Amino acid sequence: MKLDGLKVLDLSLFLPGPAVSLMMADHGAEVIKIENPKAPEPTRFKQFFPWVQGDWTVMFRTTQRGKKGLTLNLKDPAGKEILLKLVKEADVFIESFRPGVMKRLGIDYDTLRAANPRIVYCSMSAFGQDGPWRDRPAHDTAAVAAAGVLSLSKSPDGDSGPAIIGVAISDMLSSHLAFGGIMMALYRRQQTGEGDYVDISMFESVLNASPNIVGPVFAGGQAPEALKERTHGGNAMLNIYQVRDGSHIALGGGEHKFVEELFNGLSRPEFIEPVTGPAGEGHWPAVAFLREEFRTKSRAEWEVWFEGRDICWMPVMDLEEAWDTPQVWAREMRIKDPQGNDHIGIPIKFKNEPGRVNFDLPSHGGHTAEILKDLGYSEKEVTALKTAGAV
Image (tube, rainbow, N blue to C red; front, side, top):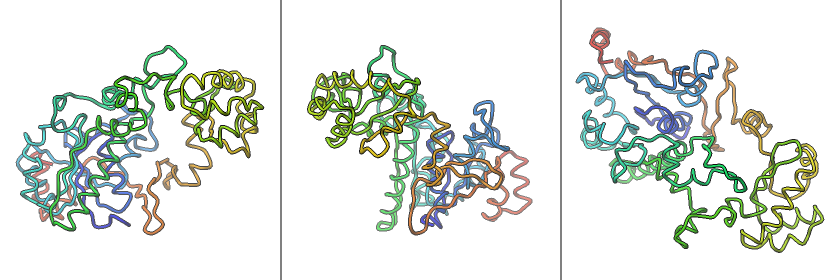
């Protein structure tokens, strides 16, 4: 597999960091998940993540498979010594603590670089390692709110306030940026022999995902007005419509060919020219017509009507339906382990050396003894470290 031979140390918790190391594990990297002996990964516990399959929470199963479990007390000199020994033979180090924590623990980038100049060290935090907000605590919703995107998460024709976005977008966007940054640093290391420090901000990951919505901000010095913007409800062909049975459909493409196909099919060609034009008032009559027209049929009837027509659309599915579609199963984005438990599949698909899921899940410290013995510790020393609380 693409990352065979890569060794990754992951000290992160919850979602952003574990999502990065999961992508690496799925493509062959050896990932060691390092946890506090007295404070395990929170996603292990059903009181926080109540949906369980088999012996594990679904959240843990979908973020931690294929990793080894090691417990280290990093406030104990012996625990820190073990980490430094691991760092000397590692390629990647991932952490998601608040800025300053790693320096206080004595395991910041400069310290680890001294032990291994080739290490690629990735820090993931809400707002990055500097700037006036660096010490603010924040998880996904707060990061998305700060990036201005939460203000857009509401129906363009309603009066309700912002709605919580259903996926942890700053977590996942930042994990993908981190993955790319780590790979870039590893590629550069081939030429220089030197690793690097990667500073990833959840907040900035959302800002970076906003090129299609910052037009009015950069060019007009103002926040967008939803009904005048292409992707906020001001375009008839990029909109959500309720149908007769109360469900919804989404139109998702405004190219001229789609506009012609839709309005000729509905016998309303007079809307083609204005809907092909800029978003805003010119689209409003067509939007009003479509809101009424789509309510005349059920979703099933509209599915029949759309069949064979070259129009960019999809029904708005609930999550259960979405994860049971033929497309999901055909592309193996939902897979089952030998016990019948569900997993999210591998989204990066290679023709040569494809990723391979290792369904094994790390118990809390389950590989501690094995890892320590590989580092040269005797069985007696391992027992003593456990007794002392260092591991």
